[in-house]
Length: 246
Image (cartoon, rainbow, N blue to C red):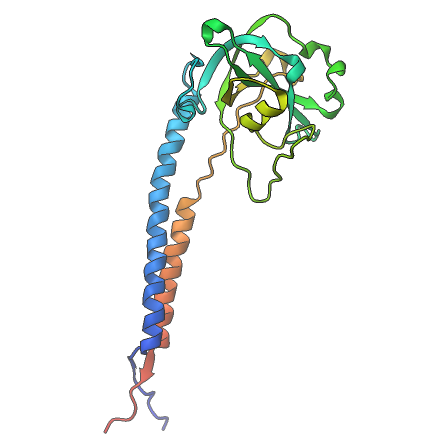
């Protein structure tokens, strides 16, 4: 006859407990933090959507709180300083490399003066030289409608701006003001709203692209799953044979 399997009983060791319990608590804490971040991100997405679909407002003459204007449609009037334009490296458009043209807009004294950068749209590489696009040299007063965008920190894989370079990797109003010798430059840019009648023509504004990744639910699930897995491994690994009955 085959001997009956020896019974096992949960008898955890001190070291296994000292390692497992803090690790599980940390994982549960991280999962809970991600759930809190999920609630914050969903509220942010809702507020951004509300701003994107709001009616345009005049850009204030004094911008005390730039974050309150981010993603807001605005109008701004002035004269383009086409001799001080700046090139921002753009994402490829329909497989074509190029730039986004930032043209400083000098606001009238009645609106507080000052300058604001206007992103006027995509330029193919062969339109980099201003002489190849005379249509971009708009003279006289203009009123621009667009979306307020704030500078974003460079990603850890994204190259930064280089002093003296002919093009810029990301928006940086203070550095741009120093290079282009612009006084009283607003700490933001206005991305000009595209005109459907112009289709994909150069300098036809920027199609709004607001990226707000929301992966917090998946992250929370991952941390909670890891905590549950660790508990199961801990319990199974700490079951020991009770030995023969006396």
